[in-house]
Image 1 (cartoon, rainbow, N blue to C red):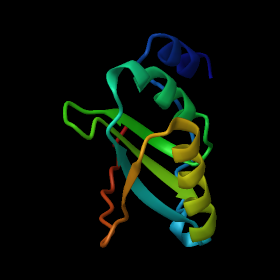
Image 2: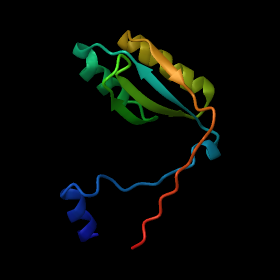
Image 3: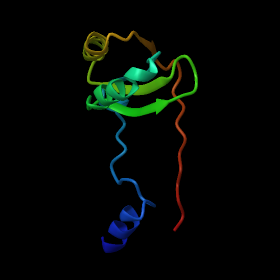
Image 4: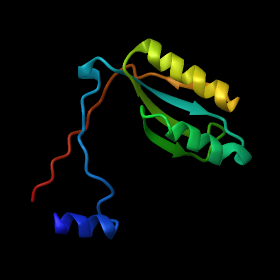
Length: 110
């Protein structure tokens, strides 16, 4: 544990956590993007990151400059969350649900 703590403090390890098959639990996920004005970036990203279902959030050099992944317990919950985000921010969200799932398996040999 001391070694892990040292690696975390030095920035080599960012976090340790479970990787859960949310689809296997019946959850739904989607990729979401938005065109966020530069002056609204910080508040928009903070708002999005406050939602527990947001797993990734990226800034891109593109008109659609914010991209994030949202996982929700149901389709209704996902749509409610996206509506709420739009209402809070005043920014339209565009959804890109996966048509096919690709999983990359990574095993580290120690």
